[in-house]
Image (cartoon, rainbow, N blue to C red; front, top):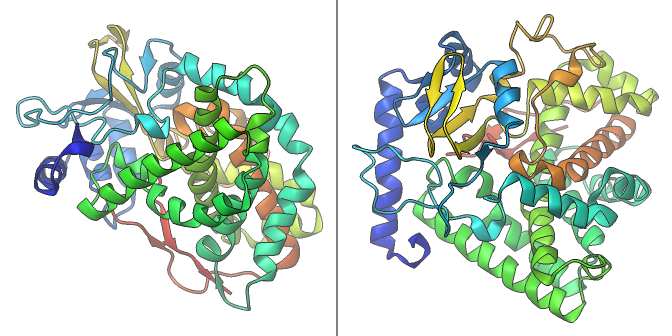
Length: 416
């Protein structure tokens, strides 16, 4: 297993996959270009992919950027984040030149990111007292308070990602899970290692980042297992009839997805809204507008730019055969701008009639568990920021993390 390999072995594995992505990207493959995660705009590659319809990428995946087909695939029980085979989802030692099996670059099973759809629905039912929309709506005052407190600690110039979005999301997740103080103090360090989790399965990270991710996933799992066993995670302990293993899974998803995906969604939504000053200022006066504005902003700039699934059996789409075991990728950001599905697809229109057609999932395959946690926090952040900082503007160029093909994760978001 990759986590047991030497640095030399792991580094060679990561560099080989990175090389494949670069070589096929240089030959013009749109999905390979997206995985290269360079400085160019991934929407350009998505538009080219949409022109090709459902097609086989040279790096071993079927790809679509069409909204209707994407919705069918993401809603089809024959497609799962994991292969049918038991065991950790990773493919060390595969000859990627003869068999470009580039899904599951590193094992993320302990981060709970490779479960079957039915598992996520079961976890969502188990977690409903904590993470359902109704449960979180009852906590809205304290969720908004977390963002108000983070904002109050800033000056005239600050970093939206580092100073507000991340610390507020960490506090909200800690409050919801009922974590003790010593664990809360560890969360920022854990988050620093976990921030690459949703990218690392598809886009090979640098060796140090991969090792930091493995360590953070192990440490988080160990910590939550200890807290659940002792009943010291009071929120998780209140989940009646839930096994310790499922309680740990719920807590893990809340930390792994509920912090970084939320922080990305907050930054994406604010960036879109700051480009539409009139709507930003209206939200400051009419906070009830935040919900529709955030939904539309995240259609245009979803926090997870693509979704990856594995065909658990052979499937036919548009006259083409997707074989069992093959990877299928839905380019969500491009599909959300499909002119066949959306009127004036590039326009920002809060409350648009076709807004419910967005493929944005707030948590990817784990969205049944994490959707409400990410959405309610993002809306709360936008309401607080628009109220308290109506004149907010980007202070310099927004910087994105390297090798962040899925999240296009924010590294720095200076505002003033």
